[in-house]
Length: 217
Image (cartoon, rainbow, N blue to C red; front, top):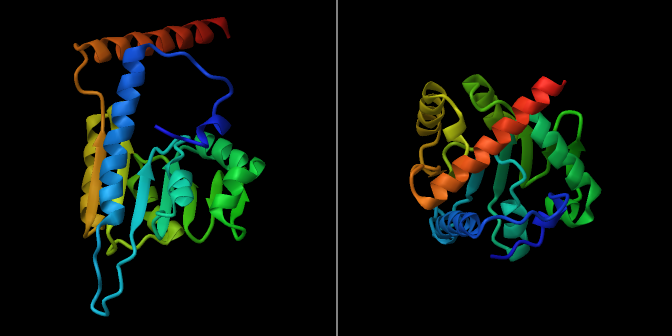
């Protein structure tokens, strides 16, 4: 597992339990295997020109996949990331700050920390609450996504934090909007195995911390 960009998104290294590291590795391998299959598959139009491909990442956070793909020379025609404005503003600030990231989005990129946006020819970072289906519709236009093109949609450990109605609406929206798409969904589903038990302990620790913070303030 190699990531030359992740250090730009973390303040300091954090030591994790070995089983959590294994879980992260399995998650990374699963996504990468399917993503590479999608990117390397060949599909041509009537003029025998290879069809353009695009990736839409919902709840992208500080994911560095786009930068890795550019570095490897296999980035799609368009890569779009969507998340809450609080997240995209921080990510936009980091892209603007570090030339290692800024060079990958291209010299034509427009960066707005205030709006939480990065807009370039082949990469778009946009802010939205993905539970708002109308907002997702507007993202298609803002990002210049073409629903007729092969699209790899990523929801990596995102939908599990939403209510079932919102999850159903998002998956239904994707199915209706994109005629040729792969929906990559990776979620925690076994809370009683060793990895699941450790994840629950971690989440309980975060919840307890937030409760203390709320009481304190």
